[in-house]
Length: 118
Image 1: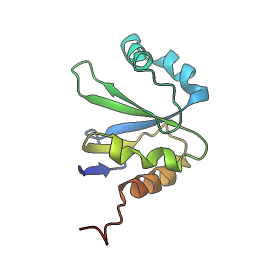
Image 2: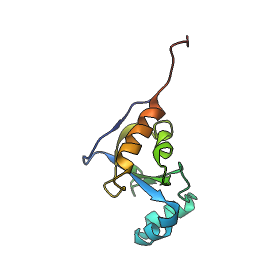
Image 3: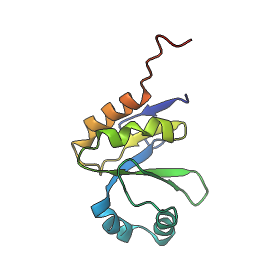
């Protein structure tokens, strides 16, 4: 498994932005046309646990959108497996209760019981 790290905030961290499906259209209205087109073209609908990797104009990873719902713990559990190796942080725009859920979901997503495996 590749290595990952979640940090509180630094400039080199890629933000993870939770998006509820009911707020997706409002969020898209605030995006620049290039980013909005990318999100729409990828088919991101903010369904729980789905991702949209948003690139910069140069092609590197700018941010990650993740579809969430009220019980967001399991939405974050798939991130370690789905994301490319890197350093990530939960965006400051995330609801306050998502911090602990994101951390626990991330940890559960990286856990592998291997005691009886060769």
